[in-house]
Every structure is written in structure tokens, then in C-alpha cells.
Image (cartoon, rainbow, N blue to C red):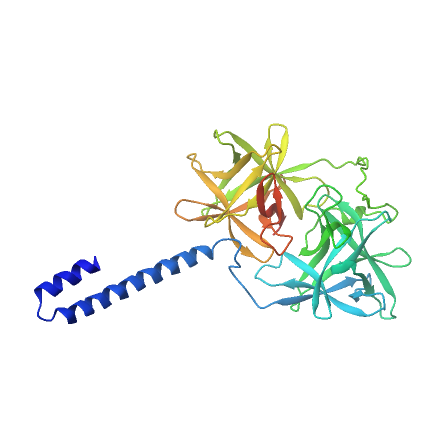
Length: 400
């Protein structure tokens, strides 16, 4: 097009050269402007993808403390083989504080803290560095006594963590923000099996995180004489029967006018299947969400994608994928997607064609509410690969 205009001006104007240069410059400027706008729009779209941090805030360090019966706080430290002590903190690096990493700060390095597999009564909690180096995690009394920090009992996806005195008394472990907020410090499991992963030669039983407090029903039933059910070699153990019966929580998308929409899993033929949060123990602060397909409970994941919003799907054992959707009163299906990331949390919403976002919640039979979120354990894009699908985050029902 620019060549044709140039030729026409040269042929029909006394000032053809000047006009040609002028118009060519204008065309070049317009082209650059259009290219710049296109790149800006593309960049803005990419920033909404969950793999990018949508909101960043200055990093805040939460102190780890044990709470003794007399109300005193004991510091928690990482200790090397020479007795040197290092700080242990929960790290808030976004606007969310419901699911925070906990790390030891050792000589300029940040070392993840894990609960390990072993055959002892309780599970050790340690900071694990490269090369198989580990640091004990202890609470320090005013007299300098070092109290073990251990995983003492499992409730579904949560391992209760306590400081243990020589007399066998348990002290709760908390993360305390500079402004005085409190989070529980717990072991968190993604895998239903004992072994989560191997880290620098250590078998990991659970990931240690700081999560929102909740009035779970298990603290009063912890028995100091009972051994935590886990094995160092992944040996199978017979599940001990108890009186707890699974409680099924309904998953709903909540519209702006307060209507609750059913959330379902859909196969390629359009068949619908229930999606539920399953409370399988006395704790309900961190629950699995499953698609109930025939006789199977299928895990639901946020998938790595180049789309504007990340797909949320259920994955069967044979690799069949089921899309997760909310259903309006008139039968319209609305995709549930991962729309943004805040630290370890992926915000999940039902997204309409008009880009309206509906919050997704888990409702208990007694009216309790949990948030439905994508959870990231690792600081990397792909958490795992599940039957050919790259998993970006695990979908869970967590305390609001």
C-alpha cells in the first residue's frame, strides 16, 4: 500500500518527493503505534494467567513460636550439628496469608522445612539442605532447653505439629505476623500415600506450612501415647477404624446476586458428574475436592496452559479429562478457571462469557463455608505430571 501511494504522488505532484517522504513517515508511525498497541494488549492478557504474580507486596516474615500453657511464647530455631541456631520464619510474599511457606534462614540461604518419614513414634521436622544436610527444628525455653518439634497425629491431609516437653506435654506451634495475626503451623499432605517425595535423600511425609486457624474438631482427641501412622519405607499399614464417617461438602459458584450454582464435572459427551469436597477426618481446614464419576473419586487440578485463564479438570486413571463447570438456572455452562495467583494460592472463579467472575465455595451440611482454591506446594510452574497432564496447582477446600 505504501508503495502505491508513493508512486501516485511522484506522478501527480510538483512536490512529490517531499510529500512522499512525509506520508511514508506517517505510515511508519502508524505501523509502530499499531505494533506497540498489539504488544501491550498481549502483555496485559498474559499478566492474568496464574503463572504470573498478579499482586506483589513487600515480603513479610512471620515468627514461629510455641504457645505454652501459661501463655508464654518460645522461639523456634533451626539448629546444626555444632549447635548453631538459625531463624525460622513463615514467608508472606503476596496479599494472601492463608497458605504460607516456612523456611529456615541459614547463612544467606533459605531452606525448606519438611516432616520426614521414619519409624519413630512421632515424625521429625527438619530443614533439608542440598547435599543431604539437615537442621533440627527446636523450641527454645528461657533456660535454654531444646524441645523437639514433631508431627504427632494425622487427620486426613493435615498433620498436627507440636513442641514436646520431656514430660510429654504438647505445646501448640503458631506463626505470628508483625501485626499480631496468628496462623497454625501444620504438616500438609497432597499425596494420600505416606511418601510425598524424596528431597536431597530424605523421604518427605508432609510439607510444613502456616495456614489459617480454624475450629477443627480434633485437638481434643490427640492421644500422647498413640503412634503417628507412617513408615520410613512406605510399608502398607492396616487403616485403624474409628467412629468418623465422611462428611460431604457441596461445591457451589456464588453469583453477584447471591445465587448458588451447582458445580459439575463434564465428559466429552456432556454427561454430568458431582463435584464434592470430602471431609474424611475431624479436620476441615484443608480438604480434597473430587469428581465422583461412577464408582471413582477423581482428583481435580489446575492445568498448565497458555490460555488467558488456566483450565480446571478432573483426571481419571485412564487419562480421561473432565472439565469443571458451573451451571446456571437456565442450563448455561460456565467454565471454572484459575484466574490469578497470589503466592501459593490460585484464585478459582466461574468465568462467564462477559468475563464476570463468580466465587467458588465449599458448603458443609451444617452451613460452614470453605474457600475453593488452587494450592501450590513448590515454587515452580509444574507441580507434577498426572497421566500426561502438567499440573499447575492442586484444587482444595481451605479455611476462609
